[in-house]
Image (cartoon, rainbow over all chains, first blue to last red; front, side):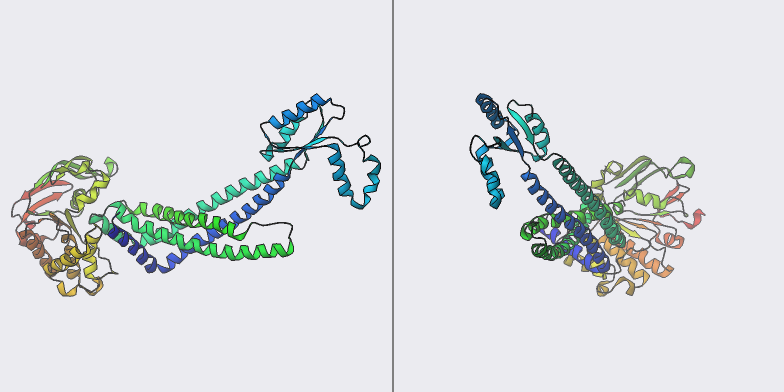
Length: 297
Length: 230
C-alpha cells in the first residue's frame, strides 16, 4: 500500500471517529465492556488453572512392595517401574526411611514407636513414590501397576483425584465456551455499532463507487476505523483489570495467604498480548461485516 | 465509442415486465445524445447499464471497444473512471465545501495532492464557480449545486459524461444554463449523453435525440426534437 493512501485512510478513519463522536464512544464502550468481561474471566481461569496444576503436580502413586517378595522380583519390579513410558519420577523409599519419616511426623510422641525402630521389628514396607508425566493418567497407571509381581498394594488417593480432574476439565471447557460466546457477541455488537457509522456515510460510499474508487479503497478507512476503535477499546479493560488484579492479589496475600495467585506482571503481560490484538481483530471484523452491505452499488 | 446490440433488461420475473427490449444503438466519440421518453421508458435503466451498475438480461454493451457485460466486479471501478456521472439530486456531501466535493473524486482514485490542487480550480472555473470554492453546498442555489456535480464528474477528465435527469430539480432558466454547460463540455471533445424528459431543452439544443418508449427504441434522429414525437 502506498504511504499516501495509508495516510489518507488513517486520516479518514480519524475524521470519521471524531465526526461520529457518540457512535465511536459507543463502539469503544462495547469493545471495552466485552474485553473487560473476557479479560477478567481469563485472569480467573488462569489462576484456577494454576492452582489446580499445583494440586495435580502433588498427586503421586505410592506403591507398596510385598514384604515376602524375593529380591529378584523386587529388582525386576524396580526395572519395570523405571522403564515405564508414562513414568516421570520413580523414588524408592526403604522401610527404614519410611520409619524415619514417621518418627519425624510424630515429633514428641516418637517414643510410641520406639519398639519398631530396628530393622527386624519395623512393620513398614519398602515403597515407591511415583509421578506420571500426565497427572490425569494416574488412575489408569495405578491400575496397571497393581498387576505387577511383588506389589502389595497401590495407593493414589482414588476418590479424590477423579472428581478433581472432572472439575478442572469442566472449568476449562466452560471457560472456552464462555470466552468464545463473548467474542461472538462482541463482533455482533461492534458490527451493529459500526454499521450505523457506515450507514451515515452511505452517500459518500455511493459517490466513491460512481467516481471509480476500488472496493478496497472504500473499505480501508472503515477497517482502520475498526482497528482504532478496537485498540482504544482494549486499553480501557487492560487498565481496569491491572488495577483490580493488583488489589486482589494484595488482599489475598493479607487474608487468604495459603492460596497463591499468579504474579500481576505475568498476568498483565499475557493479557496485553491477548486483549489488544483481540480488540483490533474484533473492530476489523465488525467494520468489515458492516461495510460489505453498502459496497453493492 | 459506445455500441449496444440487441439489449434486453428484465427485472425480476417476466410477468413484472421488461425494462428494455431489443435496443441497438451506436454512439460515436464526441457526440451529444439526448435519451428521452416518459417515466418508465427505460432511460435510467440504460444509464445504469452504461455504468455497469446492473447487467443486461441479454445483448452486449461495448464501451471503448470492450464488452462491459463481461467485466469482473473488480474491473468496474476502472470503467467508471472514464465515465463522469451527473444525477438529478446532485449527490454532494453537505459537510464539505465545494472544493473538497470536487477534489473527492480525485482523492478516492489516488490522485496526488499536487495534481488535485491544480485540477480542481480549473474545472471549477469551467463551470463558473471558481469564487465559490470555499462555500458549502447548502449555501448554493440548485443550479450552482448541479454545476458542482458536473465539475466533480469532469475533474477526472472522463471520455464520456452521462447525466440522468440533470435538470429534473431545476427551473427552466437554470436548466438552460446547465444544458449550455453540457454543450460547452461537448465542444471541448467529451462525449455527452443526457437522459431527460425536459422537452423544451431538448428541442432548443438541436442534438441527436433517441426516444425510448415502454423499453423500446422508437426513434433515433440527428438534430431531432422531442415535442413533435407526441
